[in-house]
Length: 361
Ligand SMILES: *Cc1c(COP(=O)(O)O)cnc(C)c1O
Image (cartoon, rainbow, N blue to C red; front, top):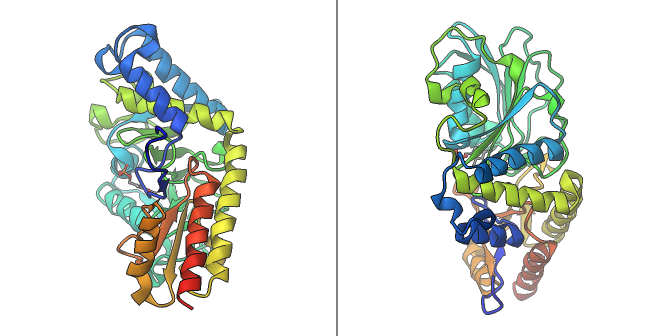
């Protein structure tokens, strides 16, 4: 961003805000990559310079999350949505059952895809309350093939702050809160995340998979949808999304610079507390989710009087607060506080809410 541009506070739910330094370095790589006097967009993905990008990206993921031995880190295409089918295709035989926690739209879509490949047992759901809480009172059946959950429900604004103990493999969609806090990777067998919420641009999906859970289904798996093919080829079976991987690397370097996932958690807790405190204090607004399950990434809130909605959106526009209109399935407002969003932007939103309260007394 140059000084001539207006500072926009970017609360977009996805693709979401990226660190300025990651954007700047990525632009440089488009102009002149690794001193080659060529753009990263016009060189071979088999060049040693690009291979270094993939290797560094895998390594920084391992370092930041503390990925144990025995896991592979992959950069795939097709978005998190492709994982909805790739997971059951690779892990679930037709006569077997997978256990799913249905906590939102994305969890629902994951559940639906699994049903195309095997049997699905929905252990619990909060669908009746428009997914405004996370069910915790359920038992994971020991004879299910795997348990699938969604760590952060981007649309409804709930987040899992504890994960159930499980004797079977645990699969988790972490698209919208990966790298926002420390996680114990050893407690999961497959983690996936579309990059465009919290770790990079659209076009690449991170998969962290425990090698030993693969290779046990009897069906034939198409080459491009077989995790083992991508592991064997180091995410380079075919042309990978070269630029998207580079932007992820640049973003994760910034995460590391800022104190890693512990540093991110400290920042994110402070940002979320600032906004939720104002939502609870301000007489005009109220939160939509059960307190203990409130997401630190996607803060959903509404006006006590919905007729004022347009007026608040107009004020937000005037204050350069971008992307706060709520998802159609919740209404009201959603402020996404991803890693790269500075606390100053949250303060600007809080200031606008206070000004709005003053003028609507
Ligand atoms: C956005 C999102 C998805 C879908 O991601 P795509 O990359 O668009 O397929 C899946 N799960 C969660 C939790 C998301 O936030």
